[in-house]
Length: 336
Ligand SMILES: *[C@@H]1O[C@H](CO)[C@@H](O)[C@H](O)[C@H]1NC(C)=O
Ligand SMILES: *[C@@H]1O[C@H](CO)[C@@H](O)[C@H](O)[C@H]1NC(C)=O
Ligand SMILES: *[C@@H]1O[C@H](CO)[C@@H](O)[C@H](O)[C@H]1NC(C)=O
Ligand SMILES: *[C@@H]1O[C@H](CO)[C@@H](O)[C@H](O)[C@H]1NC(C)=O
Ligand SMILES: *[C@@H]1O[C@H](CO)[C@@H](O)[C@H](O)[C@H]1NC(C)=O
Image (cartoon, rainbow, N blue to C red; front, side):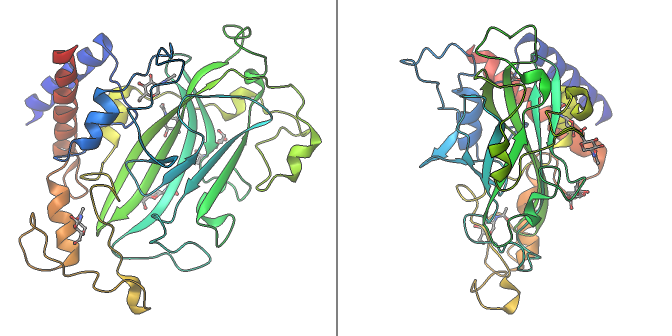
């Protein structure tokens, strides 16, 4: 197992050097490849938007402007490949499991399905940048836990003040500054049908519109207030919010993806805690389970088929992840 693991990890590294993996999701789903295929097979993630002048968003799962992720979060804004600028980056994300989950101040503990947390980073492989957008460090947005802000709202808004190295206009400043192509990288910890998962999703944007050194005072009327800001209320120094870059293979090893897209592939079940709401949570027979009619074991049975399931030992988990990722990369190379 250990030898296999390193073989596949080597393969993975070789392949990803040879040709970066396309797509927005880190790793892949198990046996329901519908979304994997769309996100990683058909995606055009180069920046020559040669699709009648429109970016090619076929690699995403977008339904009525709602972008589905490998987690419970559904992104409402921005749309992929949007050129951005202005005072701050605005992200809107539905954290309610499409209306099925409770949000604070209601108790959101549910033994079957619940959000644990979201963290976000503004990352660029090409520029080797990794800025903190939201990392649950303070109680001040955007570093606060987004689940606890805007109580009662199923949509959470993150207003991230562009840091100083992104100041500029158009593409001119590219090269001299850190302006250029980025991903809004969304990390999600959540429980789905009784099993815990961790996924990473990349939403590409380009920071090419005008960003002024001194943002207008009006932005402070925005709720939640844009941040982080420097001590004198200006843009933050980029070094202050920079994180090390993780290698692609380390990222793939870190995830523990669900067996399929929540909502589209997997029907979300909540226990409802006997407080009304959902009828008949646990106890539905699941074709892939042992049929013992227990909601929790349904989740686990499904989860074991997929890469890096929650209950495996670390080494087996990594071997699986590397294996599936290597196969996926090879799959793409064949058609290249
Ligand atoms: C997010 O949730 C996971 C799972 O409960 C936990 O291990 C992790 O510490 C949490 N992260 C933060 C930043 O709170
Ligand atoms: C954004 O993420 C995708 C998928 O992980 C990756 O292929 C692409 O290179 C990333 N873009 C940048 C600018 O780093
Ligand atoms: C969160 O991000 C800020 C800015 O990058 C950093 O100073 C802080 O140490 C981070 N917190 C954690 C827990 O990583
Ligand atoms: C960015 O930094 C965070 C915090 O250290 C880390 O969890 C994440 O994996 C990093 N992302 C990339 C793409 O390196
Ligand atoms: C969650 O439960 C539903 C209904 O029983 C089922 O269709 C689905 O496959 C389950 N998903 C997982 C990941 O267990």
